[in-house]
Each structure stands twice: as C-alpha cells, then as structure tokens.
Length: 535
Image (cartoon, rainbow, N blue to C red):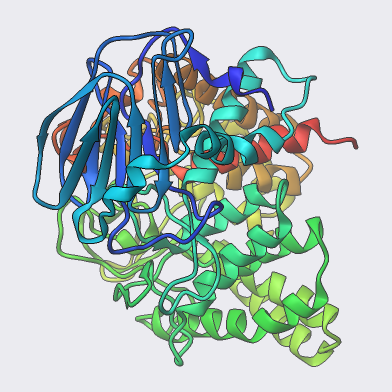
C-alpha cells in the first residue's frame, strides 16, 4: 500500500503509538506506549508513566501507529526503536515527564525510554533504517484499487491499527496475541480477539490462528476462559463464547485440520464450562454473571452498562444463549471434520435444545422480538436491545420470526435509526443514553446481526447494516484519523463527545470513547476485503 494514504494536512489527537510485535519482542509490563496529543502537535506517553513531548507545529503529517513525520520535506520524524524506546529527530521539547520515563537528548535527537529498560546508546540508532523497517509491513498490504479513495484511506488506517496491537508470546500466552488498545486496555480480551482473528484471516492466516490459540493458552483445567487475559494473570469472569465460531471463519479461509484437532478439545471444554456454570435455575438457558458496579453490571456480557442489567437480576440472555447454540453447532461441524461423528450428534442435540428454549422463553409475541427473561422475577424484560437479533446467528428463529426481526430494521420506532443497530431500541427512551451500550452503535454487534440476516437469506437488511456502519467508520476516520469504539446511532454526535460509563471526560480514558480500537479496524477490514475479493 502507498503510505501517502495516511498523509494528512492536519494534526489529529488520540492515535495510539507503540512498538509492534510484528517487528520484535514486546514486553507487557514495560512497554512504552503513547498517543498523539490533542490540540497541538506532540505525543503524550501513557505507559509506563506520563510524559508530554511537544512539537513545533509543522504540517502536513504522516502518522502510522509506530512512526511519524511532520513537514514537507520531513523536518521532524520519529519511530519506535524497540518496545522500550521511541527515537525522535527534529525540534521538540519535553513539557513534563514522570520518573518512570527516561529521556536522553543529543544534537537534534531525543530518545524517550521506559526508565527500567532505558539504553542511552539507542539514540544513535539508524533512524532511516528504523523508519523503513516499521513501515515495511504496511507497504506490503494490499489496498484494492477498486475501493473509493475514502475507503482506501480508511483501510490503510485499519491496517496501521492492526499492526500496532500485535504483541509477542510472553508468560502463559504462548502465541502472538492482540489487545483491544495498547492503552488503556493493554491486556488480551476474549471476544475482542475473536473479531481480531476474523479480520486478520484476510491478510495473515497464521496470525489469525495464533490470536485464537493465544486465548486458549490461558484456559483453566476446568475449561474456564477469562475475559481479560495477561501473561501471568486473568480476571474472574468470562466473556461471549464465540471462539469456535471464529475458528471456523479462520478454518474456512485457510483449512488446517491439524490446528482444529489441537483446539477442538479446548473449545469443547469451554462451552461445557459455560453450560455447567451459568445456568442458575437449571432450566437449560444461561445467564451472565452480574456485578455490583452500577456502570458495569455485566462486564461478562461484553455489554457492560446495558440497561438490560440495570435491575441486577439473573437473566436468561438472548445473546449468551445464541452464542452458545452457535458454538454447539460449530463444534458439531468440527467433530465431523475430525471424524468424531458420535460427538457431532451430541453437539447437534445440544444446539437443537438451546434453540428450542430460546424460542419458547425469549420470543415476545408483543414486540415480535427476542427479549431476556428475568429468572428472579419470572417475567420477560421490557428492554428491547440489539442483542435481541442474535438468535438469527444460531438458527433459533423460524423463517416467520426472521421476517419479524427484519421488519424492525425498517421501523423507526425500534431499530431503524440513522446508523443501525442501536444497542437500545428507540421505543425505550427511558433506557436510552448516548453512553456505550445504552444506545450507541457497535461494529461487532452489527457484524453478528448482518451475519444472522445473511444466514436467513435476508441480504438487503444485512447489506444495509454493513454499508451504513462502513460509511460511519469512514466518515469519522476521515475527520479524526481514528477507529472509534462506538458511534451515535442517531448520527448527530461524533464519537469523542459520546459518554462512556456515565460521563465524557477526556482526562479519564475510561470515560471517553476509545480511539484506535482493534475490533473496529478488523471488522472494517473484514467487510471491505470480503466485498473486494473475487466471488
């Protein structure tokens, strides 16, 4: 690809900057990570501690997620030498920095390093060669000429984000892996990794396999897999089970029966753990773990602050059960591939049972939609959420029910918003806010629902979801040069002004939409490259 696709005449804040595991070893505990500063050109180092590097305003700029240059010809440039050091050449100044960051200056160069691993000799690194090396992988990627100029630029940005988020094997993680964002969420996350693999399958099938194998590296002997995974530590809750489904997407892009043979027992153990440990009433449907944190009642669901969970009760969940049913169907397919026909039938029976229960308990004749069932209150939920489309992905809906779900995509009272799919229906104003899963649109949910509509041959609805989401990703990327975490379903508020868990506070990364989020980049790449591939 031509790196000029990333060249701009303005300076944009919020772009992540880090050394990529594609170029050498990373270090989870001591990585140097920053992002482009807001307001005026410069860099804010975030890890291992704060440091502000101010640039004299020189434009235009070319910023990848591990290198940059300003001015024409470049009068200021820089790149990550390794995972601990950033080398800058040109006029700049240190506005402030913590003791966790060490800086060395000589002539026109500034070396910024993680204090615990700083090596002042790195200031003499050949910067020309380093810049060439950092950009080589990007230059090798294919950006189809058939795409529009805006799509080409957005895909180039997606590739840059994808490269930035690769980490190398370390500790209990024995394969290459990726983060949602190198900062502030620097760990590996279960369902983010699923969508990362789906995007990576187009450009590096071995990487796509590694990303799923890395998650399985952390599996407990019980079969449990945590939602947040570090080289030597995991969280206590899990996350949406779609690992087998993602493995099938990767397998179909690059068949490898040996790999399936290796991961199949682990995938079975994980699904079995969910079925055994998340059915609180023993009625056959599962419920997400509920937390005490008001702005994150169910981090396990991946939809942390959805109004679905406001009452903090146990819910037979539309999404959780649909994911598990799809996993069972996928495991049946893998069992057949591996010649384990008796196991295939067992998984098909489990799939059929889940689909029947989803249809019996979670379908609402009142709304012609799937809703959660409150086990504690013995009543259906009155929250219509985007998760209610997900029985499409596992085949639980009848053809007639699928048509009812499709009708919601044309109904402005429910889900026909400017940018589908709102995480909460328009008919639920008391539950709606421009805050994460309380209304805004998310790329992974849209990917899954469009997949579900395609499964039922409802291609118009699937294409509408994809195209409108693609358009919004391209629009905001062109304006801010960032891949955002979520988007305003009404199309009126740009991502930086949206709330995150109760507020919008740029000084607190957990209260502002994340910039350069991994799965938005990989989902965009998947959609665009799938459409651009020869049929």
